[in-house]
Every structure is written in C-alpha cells, then in structure tokens.
Length: 90
Length: 155
Picture 1 (cartoon, rainbow over the protein chains, first blue to last red):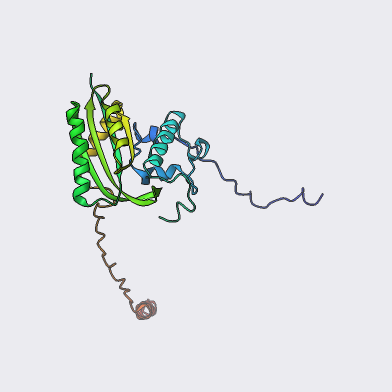
Picture 2 (picture 1 turned 60 degrees about the vertical axis):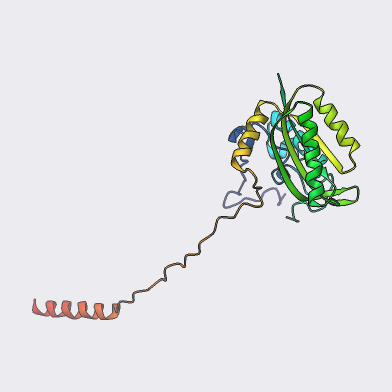
C-alpha cells in the first residue's frame, strides 16, 4: 500500500518529447553525396550500421537516399562495412 | 540526349606519382576516344581506406564527371576490370539534383577538400581586467552621518 500512495510535494519532472524532423527537408538538401564520408557518419552507429528512421527522424524519401549513399560510400572504402568504436576514433 | 555520369576509382598505392598520373591519363583518353565529354576531374590523392582492399590500406582516388551516350560506361568498366592497377571503381548516373550539387561542389571547393580548409583563426582577446573600485564607503557614511548629525543639531 505504502509504495503506491507516495505523494510528491513538487511535481515530478517529465521530459517533454521534442518533435523529430527531417533535416534534409528542413534545410532543403536535395542530393546526398556518397563522396562525403564524414557527413554520412552521422547516419551510422558505432558499428557502422545505418541508423533507423525512428532515431534520426529522416523522412522516408531521404532515408532511402541516405541508405543508397552509405552503401556507395562503403563500396569506395569511404565508410567501413563493420567497425568498432567508429565515433570515438574521430 | 547525353547523360551525365560520375565515376570514382581507386588505384593501388604501389604506384609512383608518375605511374598514377599515367593511369589517370589512360582512362581520360579512353573516355575521350569513346566520344565522352569530360566535364570535370578531381584527384583526391593518396587516401586512407576504411577497410583493407587487396591487403592495402591506402589508395589513390580519382574522380571523373563526364557526359556520354550509351555503351560508354560498359566500355569504361570493362577497361577498369582489365587494369590491374584499379582496385575499386564506381560509376553513377547523375540526376538533375545531383548535377546541381556537383556544380555547386565544383565552384565552392574546387581543388580543396574539407580537411585542407584553413580553420578560422581564433583570436584570443584577453578579457578586460575587472577593476574593482573600492570607494571608502565607511568614510562616506561617516561624512553623511557627521553632516546629518550637524544639521540635526543645528535644527
């Protein structure tokens, strides 16, 4: 009983979710360059995997382009296929 | 109508600078012979690869942008495959957004890569020293007090 009945004197801080947005739509980028490895590293996790849309907020249209660009960059060894600590090395 | 393409290839780091330039010339000539119009070319120099290719961890990168009709790409890629110096290649057709981007890229950072850009020099300005002005508060109070007291007395 006791645990459920705890009352707080001050309201508990609840984080309000900030709405995600597609950065390409917002900044008006139309073409994603596969030659810019450093830029593409933002869409890849530490192991070198492409981050899902639900984390980055990218729209479907641009997520497809990001994926295409990352795959091209990997082919040209501008991005690794697999890595450990990709972000900490920089 | 001619389509615009972009091709990037990686050459082995074993080559000397002259050999590398020769190989680049060779492919430039192949493109010219096939009637392609070279719009732009870029040499990125020796770059570190993110993973090893043919047990090499570096390579010379070269980029060509060209306008060409059909069959030129097939012929170019056949030549890439035949050449031992080429470790990797990628040819992409450019759509209209990509062409716009490529033009912008050419004008903005022609010949200079992001890494080579001189960083904006940060000028260190020493903060103006905080000079505290200590006014002899006690004296003022004493003065006021004395004056007030005098005035009070006079009244």
